[in-house]
Image (cartoon, rainbow, N blue to C red; front, side, top):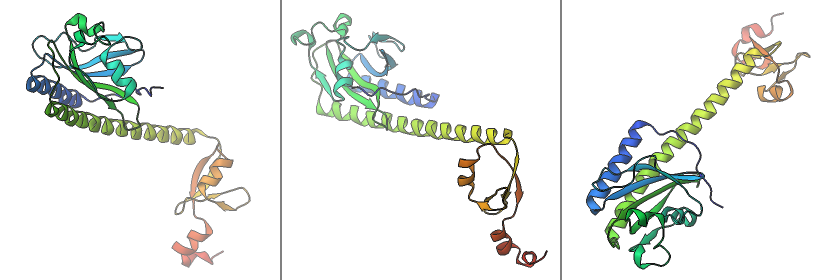
Length: 232
């Protein structure tokens, strides 16, 4: 089963970097189309497209992915490299949708997120037979590494942002809870109604509806204010 991508938001600077990648790739390899494709089930869409002459693919173009016969469908399913030197001479590819655009050769690799889910593909396509050299493959893999590193940074930043938001939501809820509970200003222990002190995490498990006021527990009083500890 394919592990599909989560929704992530990419900053403009990342888009610009990726645009530069596909533009350079198309120019160096000498092909009309270099693409970064994104899986957005049930579709696969052109995410970034090289600004090269004769490129028939535009950002936002999309097709149903499963059962489509697209080159990228095989890459995503296999999570592996796909090379098709000439679809017109290959019974497995001569009727694929890209042939209608005269894109008869293809080389593509999967792009994965840090958690192993599929983001999409990076690929190049040509109007003529092209077996692509080992140097071209290595170049694409270097660019894929840059893309996956960018995704890792964005993914981790978004995950941290989600965790921080949940923490802030929790603190907001605490402020609205009923009752006032003493909390030690030093160790953050909680005093219950029997005048016993407990670690805050233990108290919150048993008493989720609480608001807090500050005090000092006996242990912290002795440690931080020994001069007051024996006073009545």
